[in-house]
Each structure stands twice: as C-alpha cells, then as structure tokens.
Image (cartoon, rainbow, N blue to C red; front, side, top):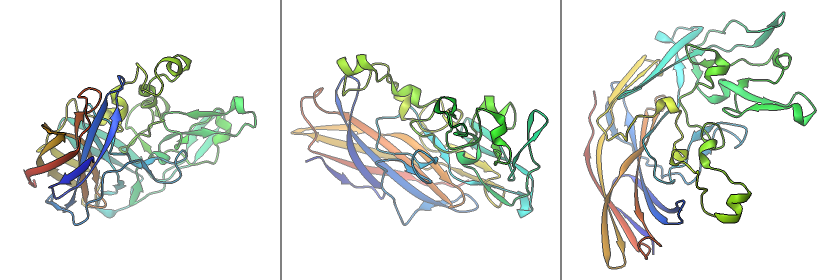
Length: 338
C-alpha cells in the first residue's frame, strides 16, 4: 500500500499532508542532483541523495542556520532558489570586500561580503573594525546581521532578532557588542539593521518572515480547528528562500543561471535542465495522471552541484473517498550547457 514505482534516474519519495479543510494530499517528490563543470556543462551525478524529510542544520537546530530545508512538504506556490557557498576574491588575491551575485531568469540579487571584523565603540557610536583581507569567506546567516542578546540576567531585558537568531551584531544594548564579531555579509545598500539579514540560503521555519505565515495557534484554534491547520495559514509558509530570491512563477527549466564572485574563476553560467516528469497514481481501480512543478533549485558552486526538486500532488480521502494504492513517475528531458 502506498508504494512508489520510480522509473527515473533520480531519487524519489512520497508522503501525506493535510490542508486546512482536512483533505489529505498524496505528495510525491523527485530530487535530481547534477555535477557542474567550470564552463557550465551539466551531467547526472553518480550519487542521488533522497528528498529530505526534515531540515538539515549546520549545527544544533535552534542555534544554527539551515543548510538544506525539507523537501517533502505541501505543494509550494512557486519555486525556491537557494545557494550554499562562499565569496571568492578575484584571481585568488586577498581582498577586504567582494560583491557576489545570483541571477536566475528574472531573479537578480547582489550581496557584499567583507573580511572578518569586530565591533568597537567610539564615544557613543558602534563601529566596525577594518576587514581582514580574505581569499574565501563563507556566506551563512551566522555571519549576517541578527543574533540573541542574553547579556542581561533579567529575562525580560533579553532580546533576539527573530529574522535571524543565529546571526551577529544585534543587541538590546550596544555596549554588550564591543569586542564581538561584526556581520560580514550585507546588502550593498541601506542600514544593515533595517534592511535585515543578508544571505542566499534557506530561512528556518521559525524565523521571520516565515513564521508569520504558519497561522495562529491560539485558544480559538485549539477549540475549533485542532489538529488541522488554522484558517490564516498561508501556503507561502512552505517557501524557504529569501523573498528577494523567489521568481514570480514556477520555473520550468531552460532558465539562464549566472553566479558572480561565488567560484574561483569569478563567473559560472549554465541553464537549468529541461526535465519533464509524468506521474500516475492508482486509487483502487481508478488511475489519475498528473504533472509536476519545479519546487526547488539549490546551487552549491564550491561542490559543483545543482539540485532540483519537483513536486506533484493528488487529493486523497476524504475528497476522493479513497487513498492511493500506488504511484509511479517517469521522465524525459535534456541537459544543456551555456
């Protein structure tokens, strides 16, 4: 029961999710991993990691940022784009700061990465020290603005930046910041505290602005809706990429990708593979055909990896009155470099 017949060259997994009305949805995810060359050529990777059931963190959950978000989630309303990497100084020569850019179709984003800095205090102002020149510098939320301030023994005076509790540079009182690491990943323009945390990676489900989309779990919900999702649950909660990395629609493959300052060569260009997946699900004697949507694009330039995740869904009980006995998926497509 609930078997999955995977006829692709990729990894696949399935699960059930329930929506706000209580309807169960049969979700199948297909995850493809590709190797990238310096000139942007793509080939199928020998190892095909399976779709993730839960988020994978850089360190302890709650105190570190997310490396990879879960893949087996409810259908995403558009495509997540994330990058896991580091800034590379041009020509391998040490630099105090490097601008890095991500471009995927109409999505375009630039960050500025500095060498390690510390926080100093000049009179009443908080200032950052001069950056230490670097060749490579990681781009993670631990090194972006944010953090938790527990310096005051009074819990009521402790504070955190819910946008990035794993970060640095935030404090309820600036005097507690002196001598501590300063953020080294920023947006090129704007006040660092107002613009917010800068990064290319996934945002944890309990960080803002994702957590606000999860809905309201109060006494009214407990009395009338529990264990279903609350009425104000927003489907965008499943999206983990920063808001400024989300295309207006689902990507379909063939879109151009360009990374600047994220590889030793300075530039990496390629096109997303065009992969066409077909799915069929058998509900008793009835067979339902359905197509997939590209849910996630994950780029790891230092590892020379591209990972893509497709989702498909079929409504199960009570909407159709029966649960699926089996599902199968097949594919066709092509790889193209540019």
